[in-house]
Image (cartoon, rainbow, N blue to C red; front, side, top):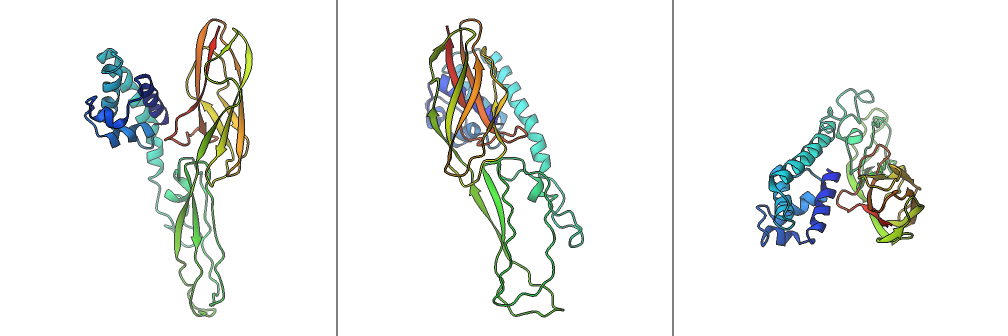
Length: 294
């Protein structure tokens, strides 16, 4: 879905970057501006009808491309995005949490721990069943927290202090109340450190592109990468590792590039991903290298 959203953004820019309201009104898209905006964010797969209206008014209405060829091309893009989204959907259909005896049931096999919390993979995590113990008024139930980093948010499960009399050794333990808090995961592009857009390089030249990005959220970045999402005449690695970055910190990310052996324009896009390649920050545009080979 992230790749489809990126292609929609790129098409929108080539067509002069009209607003979604303009696309829905003066350009004649048979879809609301909110539906068009949601398609470009990439958080959920838009319907084919919405995708086609997005493409039709820009590729055909603005850029004058062939309608039949354009529809065939974008239908293939949409089908690919739909196929890639199926595993994520099925992963959410796990069994119920705590379906077996206490301490022995498949806790963490359903949406908590095994599904995609936020925007990144979480992996299978087992949460031990609560033990029976005495709790008095002054006692505070210890906090069990699991910060599941790697996506647009992280879920933290907290158990609140209990307010009640001592139940005694034989009494049933009180039930803790629980709630969830979402930690915001966000990034901010600070700028190009080297080779700003439009830089000219020599044929066959080897150079290092560096971007500066800030961790603008509340989730530490661990095990994250910049992953290339398109091809170009210049050669560049498929992905590069991002150094661990605490909230509020900036990180410089360097990519070694070899220029093409002939004159060309090299515009290569990268997207932040988790270790297994899952795209993060679906609503944000990729960062890119844009140089001219002379």
